[in-house]
Image (cartoon, rainbow, N blue to C red; front, side):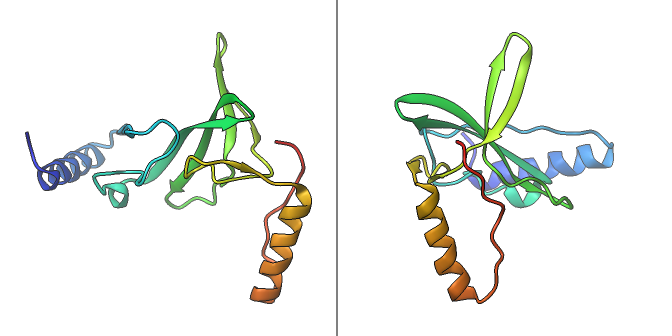
Length: 140
C-alpha cells in the first residue's frame, strides 16, 4: 500500500504526461459519507486539476435527490449554482438550481424562506456597504 505522498506524485506525473500528449484526463474520487464530506479531494490534488465537478446526494423533505455543481473550472466564469440532476432512459438531465436551501455541500441542507434569504442579504449588504448578491428566485 502506497503513501499519500506517493499517490500525489503519481498523479502529478500522470497529469503532466497526458497534458504533454494533449490527452484529456478524467479522475474520479468517492467520499466515505453518503451526504457530505470533509474534503472534495481527500488526497489534496485539487491544485493539479483544471476543473472539479461535484455530485452530491441531497435529502429534501424525505426524498433523496441528486445535485451537481462546478466547484472549479480554471479560466471560466462558470455557473456556481447547485442544480438538481436526474438520470433516465434518455441520459442525464440537469435541471433547476436548488433555491432557498443552504448547507447542501456540508450534507445538512436546511430550507429557508425567501424572507429569511432577503434578511440575510440585507445584513450582508449593510456589513459590506454595497450590493454584490446573486440573483434570487423562488422555487427549489
